[in-house]
Amino acid sequence: MAVMSNTSAIILIIVLLLVAGVIGYLTAWFYAKSVYTPIIKGLEDDKVQLNKEISGLKEDIVKLNKNIDNLNEKAGELEKELTEKTKLIEDLRKKIKE
Image 1 (tube, one colour):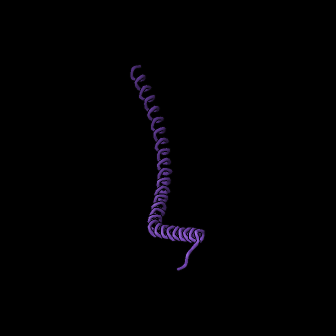
Image 2 (cartoon, one colour):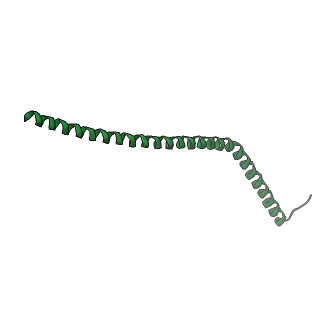
Image 3 (tube, rainbow, N blue to C red):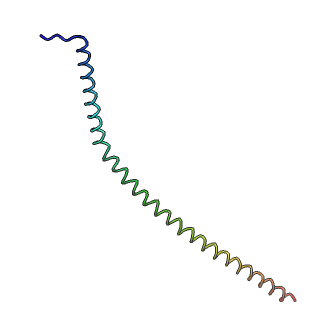
């Protein structure tokens, strides 16, 4: 029967604990990698899709802003036309009264 000294036993226990720690760490790392890799892939795909939607929405905003500008110009023109016609009506009323 081999008898170990206290120092040898302590060193052996520490080495075995370190090996068990490395095995546990590697097992956890491989498990997490296998579980979370598909989730991360899905999230990256979602991110790409959302970025495409954002680009489309930005284009829509530009188009809508142009449309608003055009409508504002048209409203300004209609207001000018309304002012001119209102003046014309007032002038005609004055002529009728005279």
